[in-house]
Amino acid sequence: MADQAIALRQVHRMSLGDALIAGTALVHKRPLVTHNSQDFDWISDLAIIDPMAALE
Image (cartoon, rainbow, N blue to C red):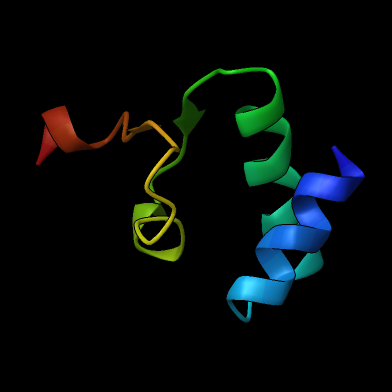
C-alpha cells in the first residue's frame, strides 16, 4: 500500500492521507467510497462511489 501511495504522490500533488486511502483501495481492488470524489477523479484505475450522489 505504501508503494502505491508513494507512486500516486509522485504523479499528482495530493495529501499523504488521500494517497494512502486511494493506494489502499487500488491494492485491494476495492472501490473508494467518498463524497469528495473530485480529489480522486484523475486516478483512472480507481472506482469511486459517492454515497451522497443519490441524495442530490
